[in-house]
Every structure is written in C-alpha cells, then in structure tokens.
Length: 271
Ligand code: KMH
Ligand code: ZN
Image: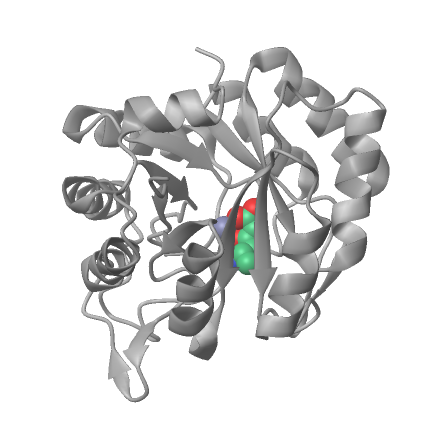
C-alpha cells in the first residue's frame, strides 16, 4: 500500500539558532511545504511563529500561511493545535475555526522536555467535539500508552469524527515514551482495527524508527520539527533532504507515496 508522507517543517521548540534553515515566517514555511509537495508529501503539519520567531496561535498568521501554501500547492494542511508550550489552550483550540483539513488533537497533559504540555480533559473533549462539528479531521498524537486509551474513550463517547481514526505514535519526547522499537511495536499492536497511523520519531532515532514504521505498514512524517540533523553532526540543510529520505525509504520498501486525492480517500476526509 502507498505511504502518506507528511512534512513537518517547523515545530514548537527549536529556533534558527538550532538550525539556521528552520522556516519560521509564513512565506518561508509555504516555500518549504511546496518543495516537499513536489517530492511527494501529501500533508503539511504546520506550526506558526510570530515575527520574533516565537510559537503563536495568531489567526492572522495562520490564515496568511494557509493562503500562501494554497497559492503554491494543493497539499492537505494539518494545523497544529499543540502550537507551543506557553500558548494558552483556548488560543490553540481557536485555530480549528479556520477549518484546516486536519488538526492535531493531543489527548493528555504531560511533561515535555523541561516544560509542561497542558491538555486538560475538559478542554480536549470540547476541542474534539468542535473539530467534529467543523469537519476538521483529528490527528491523534499519542506519546504514551495511556494516551491511546484516552483517544478510545473520546471515540466511545462519540466525540470523534468518522472512521478511520488517525494516530501519530510519538516517540522520543522527554516526558513521553522513549524512542525504542519495543515501544513502537507495543503501540502498533494496540491500535484499533482499521486505524491509519504514522510514526513521529523525535531526534536521534528518527531515521530508524521512521523506517520501522514504514516497514510495519504505517505512514511517515519528515521534517525539522522532528529531526534537526540528517545524521550525527550533520545539520539538515532545510526540510527537503529529510522528506526526500522518507520518500526513498518508502520506495525501497516498494511502497509508492500517496498523492493528495488518495490521501483524502484513505483518511475519509470531510470535504
Ligand atoms: N512536536 C510534537 C512532538 C502538536 O503539533 O500538536 C508535539 C507537538 C504537538 O508539536
Ligand atoms: Zn507539531
């Protein structure tokens, strides 16, 4: 089966001091996304930064970024509602009002490196219900086994949209599951029947666990949000080499990459 490649050009933590090629401004992000689309990415996972490069949920910046991306290519936009650790939940949640095709839904609070990622249960439930109302497909980010159970509870309460459920198994955040093959297998075994899933492997184990996810039938995510380096001691010169590597991995496993139309069908995306 073809693999959906998601590009994640910018995350909530790293800055240009960590990798000078990290895109932070709307046009920089749109350029990186368009280049990834040309290489085979069908989904763009988007974090926004303000003019000082700080994580923001400013709807004007989000709107501008989405417009610039749409001018360049028809990639499916998945807005991050994680945004950044210091941004209040209400501002983060309001991003779904812009009706991106997809948005992240982080089901639980957790320690996140030196910080705290706050996702209070009542807020998560409200956001899930609002996303279903707006037709914004949730990308369920699970950083630990209990997070999967929390998502299944949301489903059982009727707060998620139609099937299939879409999961990201996040490995390697300090505060969540470590980036090990064993943890990945444990989570994959526990996913519900028919789930669509990808690995988000943060940091050093990015290559190995992305490859393992593809080999197990999952999709792949690539970009500077997850890995600033191509290999030990070698910063990735932008997002493109990471995306190209994921596409090569899929090809080596005889899995082509899914286009936008195919991805819409696979995820049963609301139109
Ligand atoms: N970088 C991810 C591990 C989200 O986008 O909603 C956490 C994150 C969540 O950024
Ligand atoms: Zn993210």
